[in-house]
Image (tube, rainbow, N blue to C red):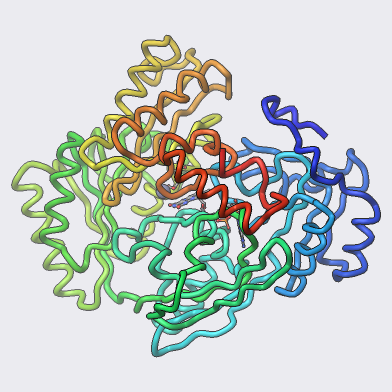
Amino acid sequence: LTSEKYPQLKRNPSFKQLTTDDVQHFRTTLPPECLLYAASEQDVHELTGYNTDWMGKYRGQSRLVLRPKTTDQVSAILKYCHDQRLAVVPQGGNTGLVGGSVPVFDEVVVSLDKMNQVRSFDDLSGVLVCDAGCVLESLDNYVAEHNHMMPLDLGAKGSCHIGGNISTNAGGIRYLRYGSLHGSVLGLEVVLPNGTVLNNLSTLRKDSTGYDLKQLFIGAEGTLGIVTGVSITTPPRPVAQTVAVLGVETYEDVQRVFKLARQNLNEILSAYEFWDNPSMDMVLHHAGDNARHPLAQAYPFYVLVETSGFNKEHDDEKMGQFLEIAMEKGHVKDGVLSENASQMATFWYLRETISEAAVKTGPTYKYDVSIPVPQLYNLVLDTRERLTQAGLYKDDKSGYPVKKVTGYGHVGDGNLHLNVIAEEYTAEVSQALEPYVYEWVEGHRGSISAEHGLGLMKAPHLYHSKSEAMIQTMQSVKHMFDPHGIMNPYKFLP
Ligand code: FAD
Ligand code: 2HG
Ligand code: ZN
């Protein structure tokens, strides 16, 4: 099989082509509901959901999807694939944005969607132990019953799995407050490519006994093994929350308001997000009755500030003071404060649906970068300028290959999402953007992936963020865990 979508890539001939004997093996070792097989090439479309990513940008041609229910089944699957040299793609909720979660050619998809049980929850420590295929939002609803919350939240929460979050080292909108998964994950159960189960589902907060192996799998994007179980600490669920959406004239003011938010809201600040007016336009265009403009007029930038705490009166007072100061100083031109939970959800909708609105607007080139906050929006301005100079874009006007160049993201964490929305994916637009964007980020001492990972998209560009020695060390680690290279091939490493 060759993929028409990736003419520059060749299928690795050391991987075995799936045979009917292989399929028969899985039929005899797994329950019937755990196997989806397209017997002929014509039937591959039945597996489209597993072969195609969320953006419809990346597409493979796998004929076999395995959906194990237990860690032992995952172990048996990987051992067989390892022995037979069958390449494998682990798949969670398939919401990844870098082409990591779907096959490139005919790799066997191992979906975790049937491993979705909570294993235990400790009310005292707040430690949750669960299967890797649990959907993030379901876990949040589960721990909410115990007055806890998941330490991460993102727009894809209704579909993404906790195992996928861990495998991409997802960040999201609460990173500012609760930090990285490298801190909140206490233990993992992982099946290595040869079938060995590394059971390290520790529930201890502290443990200084040697190499912290679980950290290697956080952000490994399925290249070292399959995460099957997760132990994660969940903080107490705040009882008082408020969200403000603010209209801001300049990116400098976005930064000034951030500083004021930190100084005045301190421990109750739980999110600080921003987006530009082209992002707002896209969202409102696709929102229908779900949202309307929250302010009386448009502004170049919008900021969403959220507080989460345990004393409503105290928190409201602090938020009020912060807004007063920010407006008095002229950094905020207009703002609106949520009065109830439904308004809070509407304000979050404006921010959380930008990603989807972009994809609905047109084929989208998505860049997810870390840049020191003062320079962050310059990447959007410089990219717009570059595309304009190249004659590919002009002021959001129609009739050009690029429709929109937008910037938004987790500005409080120095994480920008640059979305370039085109009429279609073309070599001309790609070449104008890459390696330009990656070189720009490297030149500003940033990272080419803040939170989405590398996947297929950024594997060849890793050297913009990591030295030769670092990449070689990563390759050695990969070889040690996965000597035949069957786990998520063609991705992650150059
Ligand atoms: P998948 O997409 O299925 O897989 C992602 C990668 O992990 C693949 O390489 C896959 O092979 C591997 N993988 C999945 N499960 C396992 C497993 N159990 N063991 C080993 N490897 C595995 N990301 C953020 O960081 N922050 C955001 O704010 C954010 N917002 C988003 C909003 C939207 C609307 C969308 C569509 C995506 C967003 N993302 C965000 C990206 C994406 O949701 C995250 O990367 C998420 O963590 C992926 O989880 P998933 O279960 O869908 O994984
Ligand atoms: C977000 O923060 C996500 O909305 C998605 O990380 C960003 O689609 C994107 O570029
Ligand atoms: Zn994000």
